[in-house]
Image 1: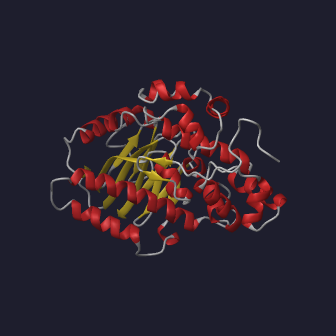
Image 2: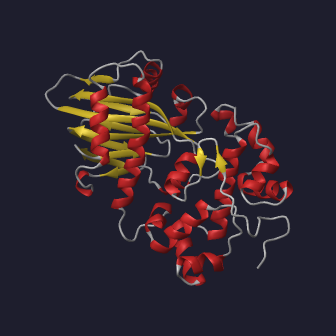
Image 3: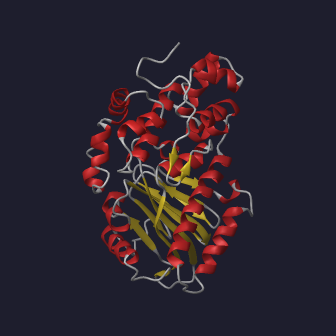
Length: 357
């Protein structure tokens, strides 16, 4: 069936070219680049018992650490010791050296040396700590706690990213992602990144902040990849879709050539499965039909293009496969809730202002 008049090009094969490179067909890399994953804060904590910190909702401090970010994700890699992590309505879970904790949805959370331990920093104190850290008034290695004999050490990373129009990575992560040491293979890239991070703690060098924030971004990507490797066979979600041979292939094709006039028949044929199996499995794993996913991905690519004020809306429309600006604008407003022009005009707004769009 041909696409509707004025809709996506039936034969367009153009891959969008952005200022930081084109799409690669590697869906995880494409998404993380399109949502502008950016290191905001990165530091190491040495804690002695008793210790504890309460982190308020991310919107309480996001404007401090990365003013233009739509959303903030935090993660903690436990290098030494143990403790307890909690998120409201989830309860507490113990963690140990080698574990990884990710708080992907901006929830308030607590990290404590023992359940019920009064925190050294409450939410207000934590915001003040973030303000001092962001202003460079604190060292990269922070000493905390009561000076007791039990020691803990963490790498702490806070990253900004876009959550709208479409961020399938965040949507597939739980509110508290806890990857345990026993689930992870020893060695590998993450260990080397941790070694580089710890080496950066030994001396202050010119460009150190850039190096550390770059390491923070790399470590988060590796954490997501490690989580992907630990997913159980029955898990659903976008990351599980990447791991499925047929659905992973379809996601790769959609990401590599979003402007192409894909049909369910063509996707199924190239993935080596029937239309029915593809449609059912894609919805089961990813949560929406393939053509709906393609529209959402096109809108995310377009939103990224529209961040360039020199990019005309008609050119963005053509790049993601639409013959006319009008057809693209209708699709964009239906998917995103505002017109491309309104979206572009509010990209320089604060997160609270942009949150209305």
